[in-house]
Amino acid sequence: MLSKSYEDELFRRLYLLGSEETDGLIDEFCMRCHAPIGVYLKEIPPADGSKLSDIAKRGISCDFCHTVSGYKKIGNGNFELSPGMIKRGPFEDSNSPGHKTAYSELHTKSEFCGICHNLYHPTNNIPLELTYTEWKESPYAEEGIPCQDCHMRQNPGIPATGITKRPDYPGIAGAGGGKRPHLYTHYFVGANTIPQIQIDETYRQLAIERLRAAATLEIIRPTNPTPDTENTIKINITNAGAGHYLPTGLTELRQMWLYVKITDSSGKTIYESGALDNEENIDKTSTIYQSIFADKNGNPTEKVWKIESLISDNRIPPKKSATEEHSFNIPATATLPLNVETVLKYRSAPQHLVDELFGKGKVTPLVVDMVTEKSQIK
Ligand code: HEC
Ligand code: HEC
Ligand code: HEC
Ligand code: HEC
Picture 1 (cartoon, rainbow, N blue to C red):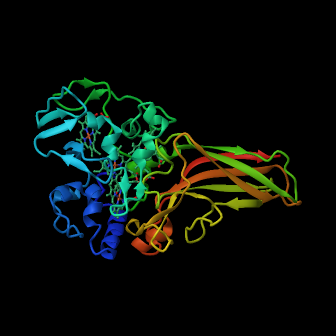
Picture 2: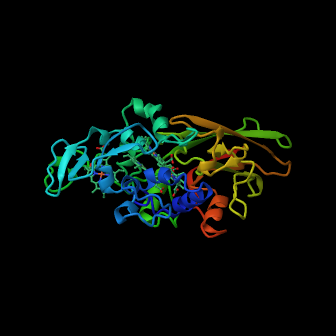
Picture 3: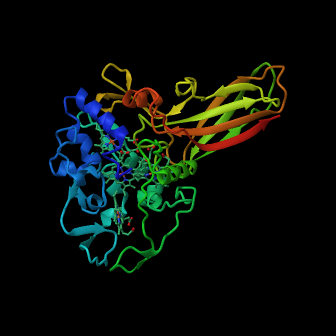
């Protein structure tokens, strides 16, 4: 996703809409993180990118990250760059035939990622994305596990989360370097799976593997199930694997929710919640874990430039749980045992917004089944 931070169609379409609606006010701001070299070279405006050099269009590239030499403050893309022949990285003794090198402690720390992974509204300062702060206040920060220890240890088959192994990969990074105890992988996979944007299937699979190692579910059954009365089932959702809130990042768009289905022994559905309707909207009765922001009239909006206040944020902090209660009636005709199926689901954006940006029905964000848990009520 870093290499696509400028070309990413979901980003570009939302950005161009925002640019149009604000007469270009947001252009430089958005591009600070999405095309940082372009902003550094003063190639923005115009918003449409017609003045952007090829290197700027490559988004957050090797040379960009390994040229960062500091930051003014965490968040809003306030990096300091020192372009030139010196490339900065985590080794004190590297010796490259291609360029000079310098040791950078910053590259080994979450603060490096926090330069862009904390986002405040540029005029009213409302926090919009706080992945870095969420991590900083988590047990992972206390234990000294930075972003790099999860996101730069992932390899196919090894999602490297809080509940999986995060192994070392010893090796030689390049000619002129000695054998290193660990080479940090550069997949930088989060949760993004929208096929039209993230075209490479390898990355989509890596994102799915990561999502499947992010949470756990626990079903607490009713103790005395009784026909013809209201029975309640509880489900605990635990953020067991993410080093920040679940979900994190662009959480006015990201959606996580629980699908619950209870059937009797003949397969007849007696309760269902969290299904998608035929226009891909999530059933209105289900809880969506996300942040909801309001515009100046107090109406919910997903358009960051219109945000004036926070309405609600029910996301799950690292190593913490949320509990849902679902009440249902067991009809007298139902045959026991009842089968309970719960599935935690995630998608990168709601259908109605994708429809607005791409045209109705043109793109369908993939719904990923993160965790499935089953139980029986006897
Ligand atoms: C988002 C920023 C970012 C981008 C983009 C990026 N790197 Fe890195 N790179 C890092 C960080 C951070 C580390 C050090 C991680 C640590 O030590 O904790 C690193 C480590 C390295 C190392 C040291 C060996 C290793 O893997 O640990 C090399 C070599 C390297 N990067 C080369 C590259 C190349 C080549 C590209 C482009 C294909 C690239 N980087 C793109 C951030 C980036
Ligand atoms: C303990 C492991 C762990 C640590 C530490 C960690 N992450 Fe994550 N990250 C995950 C997992 C698991 C997911 C997938 C579930 C999710 O979306 O939260 C994820 C997802 C993400 C996403 C994608 C969110 C989305 O829905 O689009 C971003 C961006 C991200 N992480 C950035 C960071 C940054 C920046 C840091 C450091 C400040 C960090 N992560 C630290 C495990 C970790
Ligand atoms: C120059 C700003 C910048 C820096 C520095 C940066 N990122 Fe990002 N990162 C972005 C942007 C912008 C995106 C979103 C690209 C898109 O989706 O269009 C992104 C996307 C990601 C994603 C994919 C999220 C998803 O939805 O799947 C992960 C994971 C991630 N970054 C981790 C990191 C980590 C770890 C570091 C530090 C080693 C880091 N980033 C440093 C700006 C940055
Ligand atoms: C401080 C850095 C920063 C700035 C400024 C910024 N973004 Fe981002 N943007 C990110 C990061 C980091 C991500 C990835 C977070 C995640 O995956 O949840 C991201 C992801 C996105 C995505 C999701 C892309 C996808 O494929 O899912 C969209 C859309 C987006 N940004 C739009 C904008 C717009 C529009 C602006 C200007 C109003 C903007 N961004 C300004 C850092 C920034």
